[in-house]
Image (tube, rainbow, N blue to C red; front, top):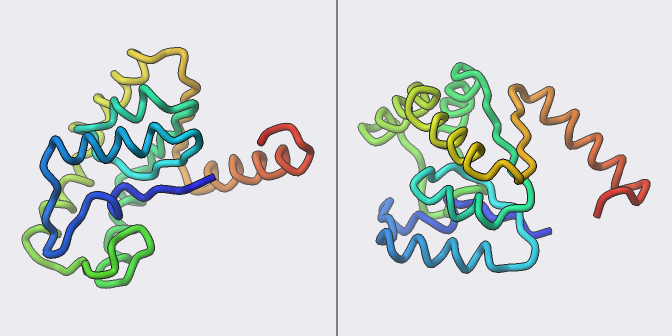
Length: 149
């Protein structure tokens, strides 16, 4: 199944963002495909993905786990980001860091509101890397047994 990293689709050279209209159109095209896994946050357009998704997985990790990952990735080439962009310690990084710190207060509510708006969509909340690995292992075993595609 194709994996789409939203940041790869979103960011242009020099950290330029697409217009709101262009970003909506890009996501409509992505979610119109028969099969997809979309990874990323971008809460401003999350409802588009909720509407089209067969399953939603919310990685609701502790803020310190998230911030640790942010710091570890700083300055490294990432497969989920365009190769021409490099995260560096600057004002934008500090804003992003603050956004991660405040995620539970600012964005988590929107995700839960969307979950309540689309109650028929299967919705998993995963709160640790251990739970993530366990779920992936279980799904892999089910696929091997022919239980899920």
